[in-house]
Amino acid sequence: MNALLSVADYERLAEERLEPGPWAYLAGGSGDEWTLRENRAAFERWTFRPRVLCDVSEISTATTVLGNRIELPVLVAPLAYQQLYHPDGECATARGAAAAGTGMGVSTFSTRSHEEIAAAAPGILQWCQLYVFQDRGFTREHLASAEDAGCSAVVLTVDTPRLAQRERDLRIGFEVPSDLPLPYARDAIGTAPSNPADQFALLDASVSWRDLEWIASEGRLPVVLKGVVTADDAELAAEHGAAAIVVSNHGGRQLDGVPATLDSLSEVVDAVAGRVEVYVDGGIRRGTDVAKALALGARAVLAGRAPVFGLAAAGEDGVRHVLELLRDELALALCLLGCASPEELTPAHVQRSRS
Ligand SMILES: Cc1cc2nc3c(=O)[nH]c(=O)nc-3n(C[C@H](O)[C@H](O)[C@H](O)COP(=O)(O)O)c2cc1C
Image (tube, rainbow, N blue to C red; front, side, top):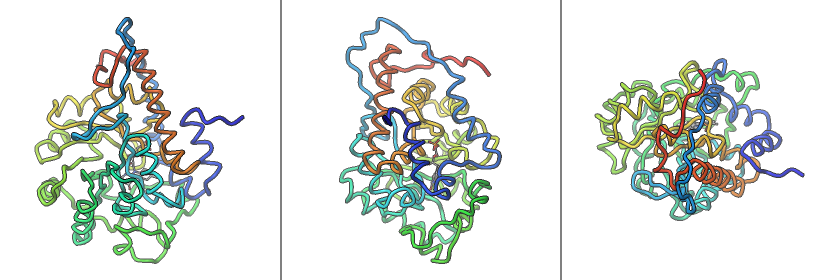
């Protein structure tokens, strides 16, 4: 019997179901994939210090992000080109996320518009992930359409001034199908066949802290800065108007050699000292991973590949089930750690056990 009991089970099924190109693009990292592996390995370096006799008869996994309630401290990370993984693309992801009681980031390279996603999953918490094009006209239109469609934050991703070398994609010759609808990028890209690196070459590598101020002041939405891994940049993010930070190395897909995000988290949390919310992503595959990230100071985590394994394996039900697995595993971990809710997790609940 092939029971789907864990994210790893969904990962295996997703690999079976996908063509080699989309699988390579989803699973791969950059360079030697050292950072990709480190993101996972770091979770194994941290172990738990449970407390007992704490009355854990009632457990809640709910929290808030930027004032919005979510039923589990896990959001779906923005992930490009989701029609590669299911015919309904981001609409299926949104329905699965909404059914699990959480929200999602929607990539600039989404295959569905914010309006289509809002119609598919009414009321879903939607964050617009922004890459800034050299032609700012596209970016202005993108921002306006996100606001009109009810997005409640902008996620400005800042670790991608150029796309890194992803050798799995290059070996396999992965190209983005030219008929993939890309409502926020197709006009800029045109319809000629292209690979992700060509598409990312249209983005503006001159983006600076002034642009963060521009986006924070031009729009009505709070800005979440995604891709910060140092205290210095966390400090600047807070000074220049970010409302939140995602400690992220793009899932090990950009600068190979940066540390695991779990290892960068504490320095960012300490630097912002509560001025902005801090989230983390990279390698989340278990509820116990979520518990470790929260203990080290994250308010919530983003999961990228895990829900998309669910999408590729079983559409919206797969997305929902992956998120429910993470929620149930987190609830169990909280209970066994002696915590009734995510807020009760502290750095004293974990220790770094080996280097
Ligand atoms: C296939 C793929 C596509 C991605 N596309 C985007 C994107 O368009 N914008 C973005 O900000 N991050 C993108 N990311 C990074 C994710 O938002 C997130 O940082 C990363 O997936 C977290 O690591 P995890 O997949 O191990 O959970 C992408 C990641 C993957 C795997």
